[in-house]
Structure formats: C-alpha cells, structure tokens
Length: 352
Image 1 (cartoon, helix red, strand yellow):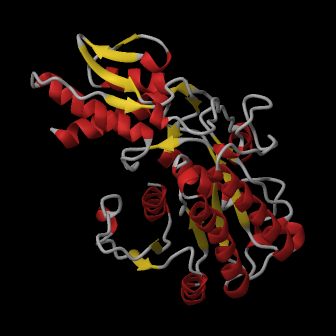
Image 2 (tube, helix red, strand yellow):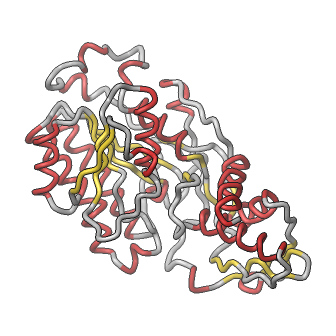
C-alpha cells in the first residue's frame, strides 16, 4: 500500500526516477502499481530484504538518493504464528539495508517505517516522540529493534537514517487481510446481498472495543517525504550541510524522528458503524461481549469470533503529530470519516 502511494507522490512532485523492489513471485500481485508500469520513470526490480546479497547489489548498482523501506511482516496476529520470520524481515532486513548503505552509498537517505505498536502501554495521551517504547507482540518488538538499529547506525556512521512512527493508516489499496479493508469489502458485499434480497453472511471480527488512531496513507507519505528532507523546512538546520557526499556528525545529530497520527481515536465498533452508514445502512448493536452482534433490520451483519482475539492486545492508541506540524508544516488532508467513506465507496464500485 505505502510504496505505490509514495511512488505516486514522487512521480507527481519531483523529477526522481522510482525503483520499486519486490520479492520474486510466481504470480505477482500488481494491482496497486499497475497504473505505474508504463511510466518511463518507474520500474520494478527483484530483491529480497532478507537476502543481504541482493540488497547489497541493489544499493551498489543503483546508488539511490532515497531508500524507503516499507517492507514488513506487518500482520500483528501473524507475528505470534511466525515470530522468527517477523524479526528476520522487520529487524534483520533493516540491518541489511543499513549495512548496504554504509558500505556502498553512505549519502543515501534511509527511511524505516515504525509503528504505533511500539507504544503498547500508554503512559500518557496523546503519545508523542518521547513516549516510552514497549510491545505486546513480536511485531511491535521487531519494530522497536529496527528503531534502535536505525538510531545506532545514524549515530555511529553519520547516515541520514530516520525511523518515523506511523500510527494506523489505511487506503483503498490496503490488503484485504487487514481489518479496515476486511470491513469495507464485507460492507460492500453485504450491501449487495441485502439489495438483492439475499440473507447476508455476517462479517466475523475480534475485539470491537479496541481503539486505534486511523489516518489516510497518502497523507502519511507526504509526512515521510518531509521527514526525509527536513533541513529544507527547519530554521535550525543549514541545508548546505546535507548536500554533501557524506554527512558530518554535527549535521546528522540534529535530525529528528517524528510521529504521524490523526490526533483522534476510534473503536473498531465505530469503524464498522461508519462503514455501514457510508453504504447507506444504519446498524443496531445487540448483546454483550462475545455475544454482541450488529443488525441491519432483521439481518445479522457482524458477529464476534474469539479466534480473532490476540494473545495480548493493544487496547488504546492515540497519537499526536504536533511536532511535525509545527516544525515541518505537515497537515492531514483526509479525516477518519472521509477515509472510511472512500474505502467503502471503492469497494462498492468494485463489487457492483
């Protein structure tokens, strides 16, 4: 999701050539970047973030100006099933990228995608850049490890390396296995079933009372681009110090990592209700705890499935982007309700 959105932004606003990196697949899924394939400034190459030889070759051959690492095993639930793979991709993969940049292209700017799952135990709200990091999942732990690696390489080797913290963000391009897209697709399907006089198959979800801070992915891509060029926007930095083949320790020590968030929080239950409303259906909730269900008329459209509960869940996430707004001038353009409306509208159009 994030990679194609970033490619769209850079192709529209810069003169950079974009290289998309994918693992070799027998049946590649091109849906999110199919519109870019014929663009002469965009190309796809094969590499694997868990294979340092391929990452070394990539950096050595192409000498990139920017390296955005959106690669991850990013399913929190899956990280308990495959914790070793999660760390290999999310932490060791970052290490391989940093080593390749250090060895072959030290002027390259590296972005590592952090997550609000690094803030699993709220100490204060809203959560900002100074909030203590902790984790309730192998996924969150792997991202904490990645943040420490980025910090170590930045300080040790004067690399322009940033680990920005991204709270939950979605778009019409989100994979169908992620909850918000699962909901928007389910709502579109149920809307069609109800309109056609069929008995709908309910959407099966886990903890509907968990609260998240949701934003629109393209907004975050703009914020990431600002982070990666922050010397152009901060009065306390001198841009000429970052236009060298190698960076000085004094310049690199002044770089800052930022939180991107909406500044508001909503429950999964709120998301579901809003999604049905966007499709023209008002729902009524009945029951309690595992027996709680949602109805459109007499039709059950949402039910709770304990199998989707996690061994340990982050119940409440609420971030603030005050720092990047004040220092770099970033502002979100799409709010929560509009985000949900866009996703549902997209999936209604797709299914009809």
